[in-house]
Amino acid sequence: MKIVSIIIGTRPEAIKMAPVYLALKERLGDSVKLISTGQHRELLWPSPERLQCTSRP
Amino acid sequence: MRPGQSLTRLTARLLVKLENHFNHHCPDLVLAHGDTTTCFAAALSSFYKQIPFYHVEAGLRSHKLNSPYPEEFNRQSVTPMARHHFAPTELEKENLIKDGISPHLITITGSTVHDAIHLIKNRNKNETGLGTQRSLVVVTLHRREANLSITQTLAGIRATAESRPEVVFVCPMHPNPSVQKAFKELLGNQKNIVLTNPLPYPEFISLLMKAQLVVTDSGGVQEEAAYFGKNVLVARGETERRDGFSSGLVKLIGVTAESTQRFITETLDESNLKKPDNQTIHDQSPSASSIIADVVERNVG
Image (tube, rainbow over all chains, first blue to last red):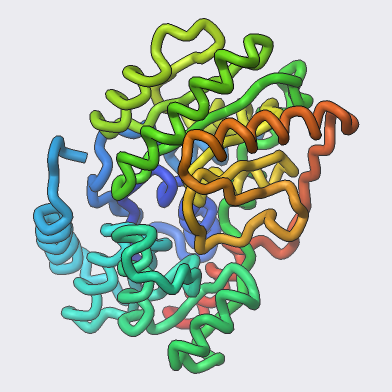
């Protein structure tokens, strides 16, 4: 199984890469890893699942 | 962000952390976004381990290595280390080609922030009163290299708030302690200025959708507000982002108190003469993230 790592560190990256993570997860499943470097620790981050989940009323 | 953390120490810490991750998971492909120190470290660490690195939101250029600092350097330095480049538009693709990147390694995608907004838009739609509210100005400022500029911009906002008591300024503050200190010192104790901590993203988007005007030095906020067809004043000397400029709704206003006050006042007056709601939400299809996922899948499949 090929592994794809998505690296994020700040809130804008978390937001802009969330849809990429979700799209890749649909195609490749659990071989997609989302890793935070912790560059910004204190910003409120939405998880990709939370963004997705909020789109379904 | 750790208090007083230098870029050197941050970069060193991120490189070690990334190498540990790469040793543990042995990825076949690494993806990162934009111009942050995280993105730079991810590209460098991938290069050292010879893991293909794919760069999302590649090719933006101010062509001034020090501005924005360190983001312009980060983005330019990532380019030669990346094996594939996802450019938002034709303009960024041309920048990459000028840097010697072969066109077949570049894919034009549009912006993934539009996909993120689509993910949360439906929820926000259910809220009441989502149309533009007159006299609501949203302010975000955070530039690391420009404490002086922030001070000037804040002074301009303060002066505008004093002369326009009917206008409410809402300022979600960046967590950087020196930025928060400047906001509190210059904008505190003014009854039509609201200072808040950073908002959760869906709530921030909801606030942006209601704003009559957005004042920001953030490229991301510029992009989001332009996407909603908002008036945006970019409080910077220059910008590598062109989102919204062609529509006339986005203006570069520089970093002086005088220009800040003048542009805010003029823009509010002009937009008061227009119809209140000019919100445009574009549907893009296929989405940027599915284009990126297709390319990645083809290359690891």
